[in-house]
Length: 163
Image 1: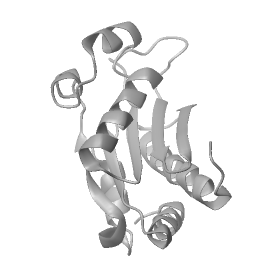
Image 2: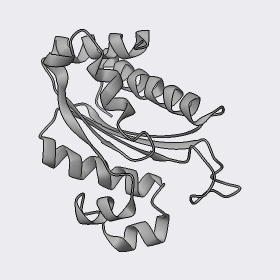
Image 3: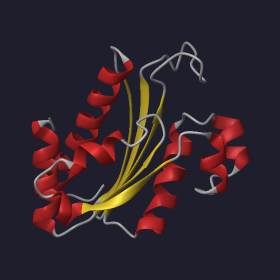
Image 4: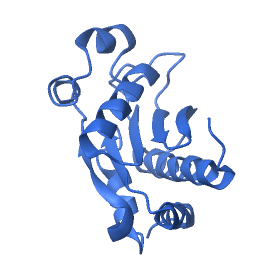
């Protein structure tokens, strides 16, 4: 069942006549899936790409290898690059990229523990870059990240203020 904030966000996007698209790493399509369950999904959802592995980030999304090497695949810098590229590919009004760590074995460390999620959202009113550490199972982390993404978009639309 889609959360209330995702439905509210979807309705706000539809009211503007906008389209949304996603570039998803850690979420592996969850954002696209959650927004597809909204009653207005046909009006707003342009599409998405799962770019879980570095190969896809570099070869399809054209994120420079040096950027990934310098900052890691799960970083604010790589997430921003994914959002910028996805905005071009999908020609969407709102473009969301998400990377992060839901399980051990990635680039986690003391400053970036498991549960760290990076979100970059390009909107007509400016770009939102957000980092948050969520707790729980991988599924709980991703649901919290999906709801946070919707909340960030909804608040930006509601405020109607640039940047």
